[in-house]
Length: 315
Image 1: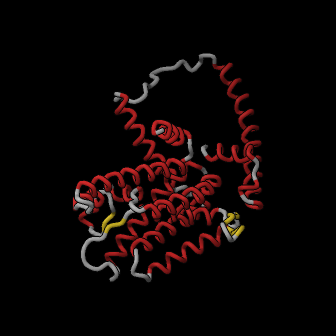
Image 2: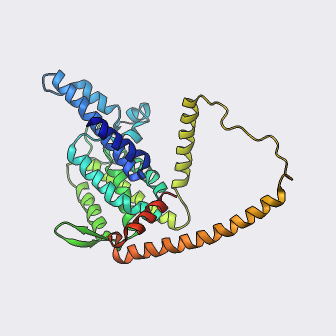
Image 3: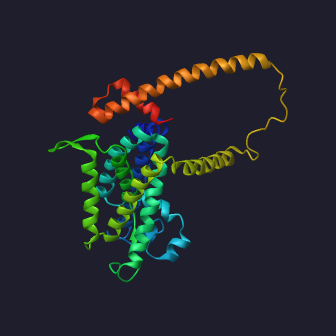
């Protein structure tokens, strides 16, 4: 059974979209953390030992600047870290519901940069709010969870398609803009409370970034591009490291420019013509599907249209 589960997870991670991959990573970290917690409790007479708290804080964002300076990875690791079941459940449900919408409209390749940058800004807002506002109190405070990153996805979805219709239990069809407005308002109320105040500030930081990301994208500035370029560079470096290559791909020193010149020009001209025609038909079909989503919602699409939109989001 475990082998079957592992095979399913690997298949979904390798062939699923970025939303699925982010959810898998968060759930995997949650399982590992709770296994460590179980071992810690059982080995310490069913009380949580101090070393477990130190273990968690090693990956958590802190209000202490020295901790963050000496643990620079926490700005990333904290947004994949959960302890409570309900915490991760709601975060991953929102990630799935709203991430699918974002991926369908602006592309699968923008999901991870939006998630990471939203979580980073949320962490910065958390740090500043605890240190500059009086609610923090004495001692270091720590933050964990994907909520700020997920709120960036949620608000981005609302900014992209405010009239997109979602069907809610007991309420029926509700436009996306109202759902997002309620979620943001809950965090605004939470800022005035004394429970997870820093967390609500972080959520609003992520929400603000989600709106700003879409605003910049509409103005022709794609903030996901440099992030994807950096991630590709890191990925290629690791691949080269583990494959034993040092010099990268071999370079062509000389190529005869006259070799089959006429044939190549003829083929290239033909391919350009075919590509232009295919691109025009492809874009017309994509625009038609997006218009249908805006008018009738995602569920109105046929199976073939959903598959086409899914494949388009990966490009």
